[in-house]
Image 1 (cartoon, rainbow, N blue to C red):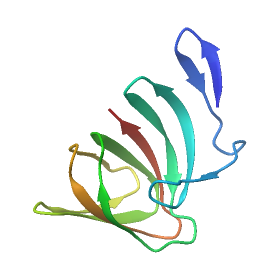
Image 2 (cartoon, rainbow, N blue to C red; image 1 turned 180 degrees about the horizontal axis):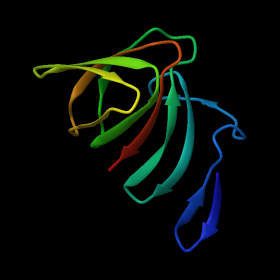
Image 3 (cartoon, rainbow, N blue to C red; image 1 turned 45 degrees about the vertical axis):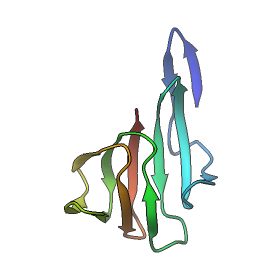
Image 4 (tube, helix red, strand yellow; image 1 turned 180 degrees about the vertical axis):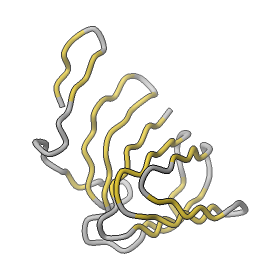
Length: 109
């Protein structure tokens, strides 16, 4: 990630290093963190699912590649494919079941 100044951030995903996501597992790249808002890329790495993930903020996702089933406790189940978008509320408890090739863009606010 490169901060170009004046709040402009740039990342070429193919050139960036994936880091371990300490919160939920998997791998991520952070594009920006600006106060309560952040965004980047996430993929599952070697794990098959992310269970009982409590969302600390609203999370909006765009599926870039692969598929994912998101089970929302006391809510709907989403089956997303590449090109789909979803926005999940703060405080939702979710179970994610991504395909091995799954990559998402995430925005947290």
